[in-house]
Image: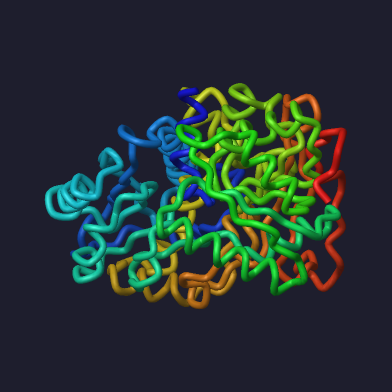
Length: 424
């Protein structure tokens, strides 16, 4: 239950190399040390800050981020650093609390004199205005609305595309979709309305929007409402724990829900905790799935093994997030030149039109993606035995193609594998 609760609390937030670094984002061909006066920059090193929720709500998941940060920074330094400078970082725990996040970001900027910040947290709201005023570059986990309001706060993705999720449901045979949300908070209601509008805009029918609180509501009643609505698919704007409860109840009562999609849950710990309950459930993934393999994934795993061996399992979602954000920050330092300024860093990254983290993400234009959902992503599904994720679609876009002008075929099935009475 503890693991399930942790995933539920993160649902809204996620609902997201040495010489061997061929194809990585950074190019360290300029191997010179230049004396500069900017914050965090010395002739031999550049110092950045890392803010992460290492305690408090969601800490179990966010904790993996430090390993991803260590892996990418370690690989960069083995390759010679950036413009001849070693990359160093100081980190702080914000406890998942906005007031604490404001305090620790101030410590990093003023006391540690860092050049900029990498952030894996959902608690930056109280720090954003000050960081923007001081033109401190911030790269990271852009799930808070304020990220889209500040030019200094940069990410490769801000949210999932509701249309892309809808295209996946269509491709797996879905026509009528019920939405289940965690509770009735206004942000949740607004998100559900956004998804409902997007699904209907591409030809799907939204049959019902059903709030569910595990502490107060009956799963059987929720399943009954899904069935009576005529839905053949379920989109859960909730955590995997709630999804597991609903899917298990549907199976126990003989109700078949053809396609089930959750917005948050791509994590190996989920397989251990409740894989059998979630067999057949699909999740969007905003980077190349671990199971897809390939050179970019192998470079990531090699770096994790070499520079963050204590993590044990490299295939962790938040480790990958931090790795990508660190890569993005390194790219900004490279583009900012031998004597980087904060303003030059921000301008250079905003002018980058093809960031792909060395093949880990779909190329993105950082000047045009501000606040916009990612148009393309992958989809994975928990297998029938609940023991592993499988890649159903490596790339699916909001227009229903694979982003290369061709149709995006779905390999496998999006169904839950629940036999019995249908919801049609």
